[in-house]
Image (cartoon, rainbow, N blue to C red; front, side):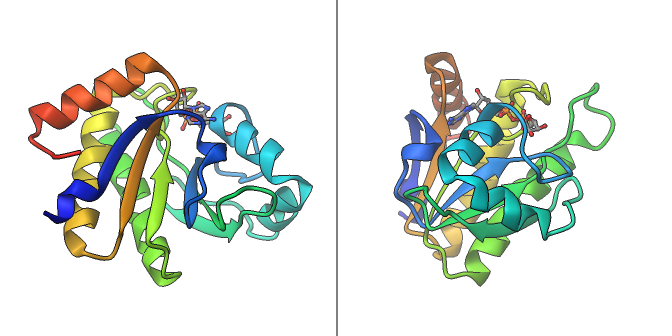
Length: 174
Ligand code: AR6
């Protein structure tokens, strides 16, 4: 069952020794709060130097850098949508963030990848709806056979429980 490679866990993404962790960045790619701040702090100042050379990133797209002091080899920076009311293309843009992150990972032969709940913090995306998109895109990637591990890591227990419940509702094995 290829989809069994999806893992829903609780923890801090900066601790994961995977090929790539995904950063929930903003359009500047120059750092911020939330998981972005934690990743930049742990990776060290060479990360922001490399990010500054990339010229930003449009919403829904993704860019890749080295992981520097992180245990992860690469960081894939994606910019999820800011939630307004759900009618401004938010679901399509969030799906694009996951899909473009997986596409970039494939180009770099990345086989293990961990995502935070993109857009579900500062950007205000409702967690249940964000989880459904994360899980649907992860299922597609799992079924492609291109990945050994797809980790959806949640910072809090309520977020963990939300992702688990949505996976059960969608009958996505984890
Ligand atoms: N490990 C895993 N998940 C985390 C961690 C961590 N260390 N820290 C926070 N989270 P957010 P967004 C969770 O706000 O909504 C930044 O300022 C967090 O609980 O980090 O996409 C950027 O620069 C939440 O569930 O990202 C942008 O300006 C999830 O990660 C903006 O925030 C995402 O929350 C992006 O907002």
